Length: 245
Image (cartoon, rainbow, N blue to C red; front, side, top):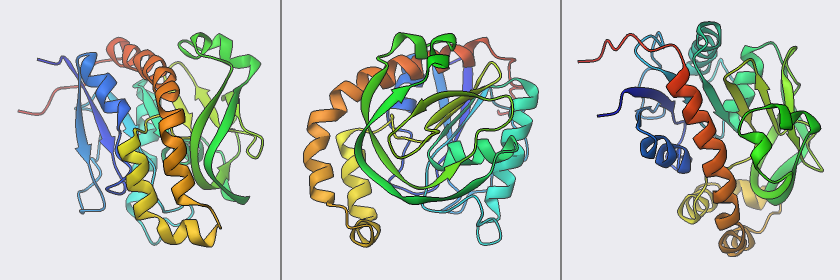
């Protein structure tokens, strides 16, 4: 039986935790899902859990009037950081983490969608797990919004278009704007779901699909290393109260 459990917030059916859940479960960390789009309520507290994963989605951090659950997520992220419990934010999740820590989230100069290189910063060598992966690799990008780096955060990665692609805050909070967690199936689901967005951005979805077979395997190696490092943070974190039956 897993001795640790994380809460994973999923905002849309196609953007699953993917390799995050696979690695966590292999490391003995259970994953319990909260899906606001069903709708399911965001937990009022992270006390029953040992960590928090916040996934991507098509909404923006600045759309909290339209999506009130985003306010609840920001409060939950802030509580997790205060308590020292690990947080992993992906895409929208990274933007919510940045906003929860005092950063700003705005629309970028243009949408960054497709397979593009990510370059680690010199500071990444001082962050556990990140120092063990290649300093440059190709990842899937799918975002129109960007964030400023919160005060006290450590920049971990950038791309040619986007200055801040990943950051760490404190000992156990990571924000990752690009998609490390994807499998070929995940990519196919995103291309199918976001067809209108691809057409509006003049991005060839079939090319993204065709290139997935080329880039997913190498990206998966990086993902398993980094998510394994985050799983270790969960194992070392202050334990949840285990209020679940």
